[in-house]
Length: 316
Ligand SMILES: [Zn+2]
Image 1 (tube, rainbow, N blue to C red):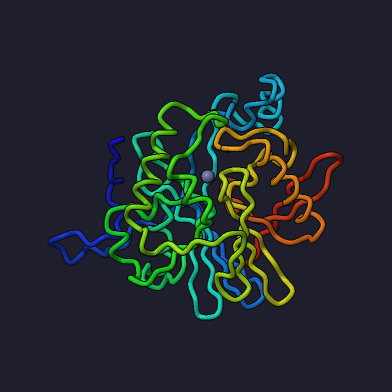
Image 2 (image 1 turned 180 degrees about the vertical axis):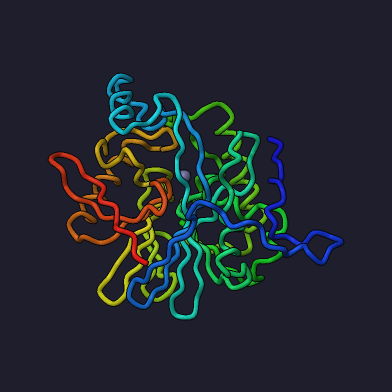
């Protein structure tokens, strides 16, 4: 599939002029949120939003029940904007980026996502300072930022990219038979994962079930969404935060058993979700997930047979 480089984001050097680094107008929406987990500095960054069909939120749910959930949340019935977040963390002298956003628009009309790299740099984080990248999985909205023109050249030659071995293996011959995606998506996901491996093979460090990326930062494979999907827990000084990747979507608290269209093993994904939400509701630790509304930081409460999302009050 043909891919297109996004329009200039104002961060790359452009030929002839001295004003190539000139400041763009400030954004009118908040797109980064900083917090401290013990000794670990954390920054949640919005990559933007992806408009996707609502049926993908629960393709095993009765359409009328799904429509009622959307209506109860004052959301439109057909398509709504999924948030897309990445996390940057600093611990023990390492700078760790967890996921890289969408990056390119692979001809799927997703022009409002792909902002992570620009926003990282706007936050004063030089790409060359990133020592480690953790990929929760290899879907294009998590790896695409690495494929934007000029990004690889600005990353360190010794950058380590941590990903589960089973994830890399899966994308050699991915199975889409249990997914439910709009046309074009499977091909774009296959092509992007392939391109990522071709370009970054030498940086990839695989792990089986768990890997300590930096002091207090542990990636743990959950499977489900994809076979090598992992979550990343950051813990220090008695505090902890889990970046859940795509184990949880906005609807997943009320309806943990709804199958998301991007899940390659939806039954296992539902079990992973329930297990994770049960753990996090018991511990009271913070949760961040890729597709929860920015800044996507909150806690989880038990609500009867299901769960309830409790967003944090922003701190300044
Ligand atoms: Zn995703």
